[in-house]
Image (cartoon, rainbow, N blue to C red; front, side, top):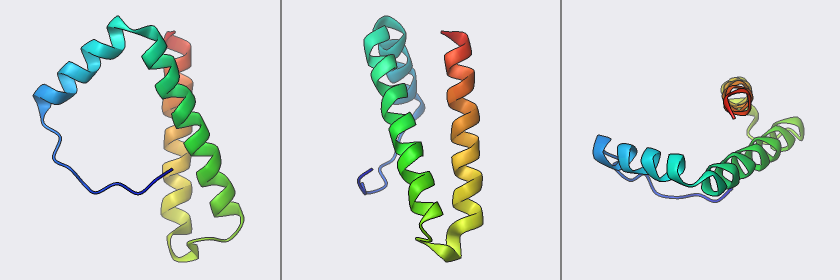
Length: 76
C-alpha cells in the first residue's frame, strides 16, 4: 500500500469508474485482489504493533474492508 495525496473525487468520476469495472470483470477482479492484499498488509501491520495510537480505528477499518470484500465475492 503506498501513500497517495488526497485528491478530490467527484460523482461523475465514480460513475465512470463503476461503468469501467462493470464492463471489465478482469479489472474488478484485479481491484478485489489488490484490496485483499492491502487488507492483509494492514492486518499484519496492526498485529506487529505499528501505529498503536490508531490500532482500534485501523482494526475497525480492516474489519469493514473484510466485510465489503466478502459481499463483493458473494455478488460475483
